[in-house]
Image (cartoon, rainbow over all chains, first blue to last red; front, side, top):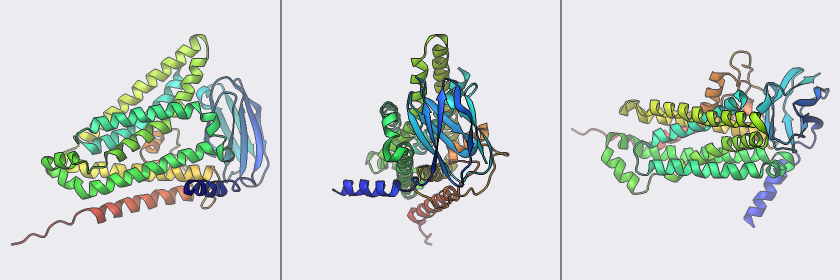
Length: 107
Length: 273
């Protein structure tokens, strides 16, 4: 019972916090980000919904935005971008960072 | 091949540095190796399980299960390091001066060896599940590219392990009268860094919304991705743009560990004429 209460409390703490974020979808197919340049025109925090269509695991990494999250083959992840500042940020699929490159442009 | 080598090396070194520091702190305590290698084995097994269920885990908590799992693992490790540090503050200095006492204390089971094993296991788990995911992905490919990636991964494990071992050897070769202070200091930095990283994961999951602004931006001077940045991240959770909460978590853990160790440390007996 105590465990269930704790879990419920944790979920209550977690669930509403990111519900207000604008969600922007992005995709990785082969070594191509789709779109190659993700234009973001929102105020405040936003969430990237990233789908890896490949048959191998990937990792979305955007150093300047503190985004670093693995995604399984054929899987989808969400990653929050906190306090974004306008600018152009380089992103890669880390295991294939020499070829799989994209950019996020925050206006 | 080179990309896989670099990724795996970095992950192995990040885990290996933490393991090297706690292993050095154990010194020659009986069964120390059993607990260290037991922790490595448990962490490796848990990595396989987490990698297998990675797709499911990330779906929990609205898509932030991975962040919350990482935060939980880090907080558990900080608690275990606190337990060990408090014990060391009570007994360590005496042990360093009296090897006989070391044997007696450790044999009596009073030393929190389990805490050390848990820290080792969580260090391996944090980095290991990603390594498993990438290597599995590489192995699932075909032909020469898959073989090259796997070879790069294997080389990364060997090199990462080697550099970690050299670091461990460097710490244990510090003169006996300094080794207690050095390992306590390194463990305190390690714990403070883990607390800062846990704070980052809680913010990334949206669980904690306060103190989210960057404290400073050192990305042009000392980026996370540089060699020194990677080392500092493994040692003390360095981030080139830490949020205010990360810095607060780091500073609070540092102060709490130092104060707790000082309070728990036995007072030197007054000299009587």
